[in-house]
Amino acid sequence: MPPVRKFAGPLLAAFLLTVADQWSKAWIVRRFGLYETRAVLDDYFHIVHVRNRGVAFGFLSTLDPAWVNPLLLVATALAVAAVLAYIYHLPGRGPAPCGLGLILGGAIGNLIDRARLGYVVDFLDLHWRQLHWPTFNVADIGITVGIFLLILDMIFWGKEMESASRSR
Image 1 (tube, rainbow, N blue to C red):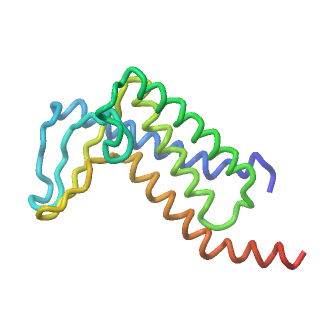
Image 2: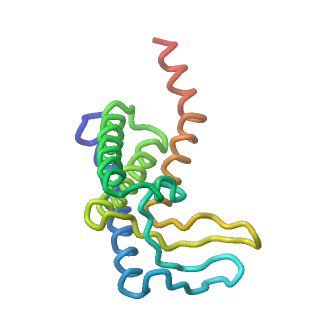
């Protein structure tokens, strides 16, 4: 597959996810005050406007943002470059290209927040009784689904690639 065509699907997925992520965050910031919460499903799901200065699950959020934020900006930029390199070297079959596009879009969505605001806007809050999942956003959903698609690709399409390389 020509390199340009190889990037079309993943870049489209990344673009659509980034737009959805940035739109949803802008909507939350306009409609909700910081820490304002609204129940969608009383015992399970709330919308709450929070700022995450760390990474997944708020990890690193208690450290000094003067050095954590630049570190996270560089790390995310390197991750974006790694995903683009992986897309380039990928055969282009199975769900991996879409998964990589979603990971790329999620990384870019959160990178935009971090570069522009110094934190990431999170707002989706899932819980059940005493169990509470850390608040997340649309970019995080894209990254999670993208990783799941990569795992599926490794399980089902990876064996196909192994047998094809053995037969050469």
